[in-house]
Length: 265
Image 1 (cartoon, rainbow, N blue to C red):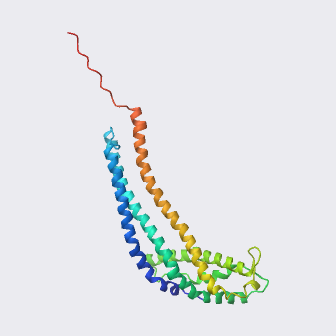
Image 2: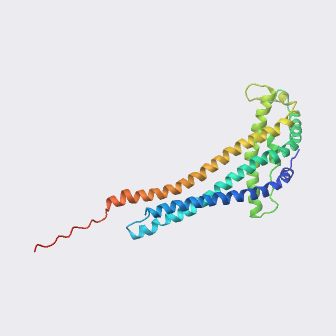
Image 3: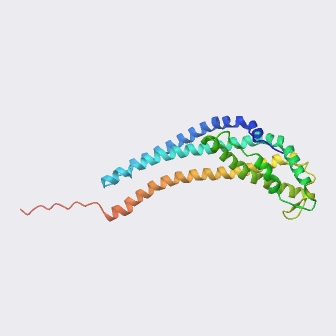
């Protein structure tokens, strides 16, 4: 039995356009917010003369801190907005777009599993991975040509399907079937999988919950990474200021003017 990849992807074509138009305002908003914050930080640095250096070469190099702040914060702000908007759109699309797709294909998946189970003995241990592996491999995207674009697209699509999608589907089905069979431990037999009719209703919702949980963890880690990069950029500027103030000025203090004494009359 084959579930072609095109039948899954054709239902999700509007998702890409919505993602683009939803992400742009958030990218611009967070980018502008990052630029305003960068401008305020640079204003305070200039007002307090925190980037003034005595050595001419160091004085010029220190001015690159302005460039770093004015570039890093807007760019990272835009990246944060993009991650946030993609997360919002994905969470909405999971229920609105993906769940109906899963619900449409759940009977076909159940029939596929039933056909595979009929070939097994009632007391034979069942590995959900071995049951689903032929199905997952049948959904691979094969490049239409030998071009770099087609080969790259095939690589990333298959990475998602074979590794992440296959593992997720296997874990969800394993948990669902163990719970419905009422067995102890994580061992299933052919007899436990004779009646799979209830999967048609429960599987789509469980898959959506599992995908949403993994997506939330992934996007939260991306947001944290972007925030850490912004802090790292500011930390570099702060470390340079501390290096000048607490190392250079202590080692090479400014020369003090000697008092001028008048000769005796």
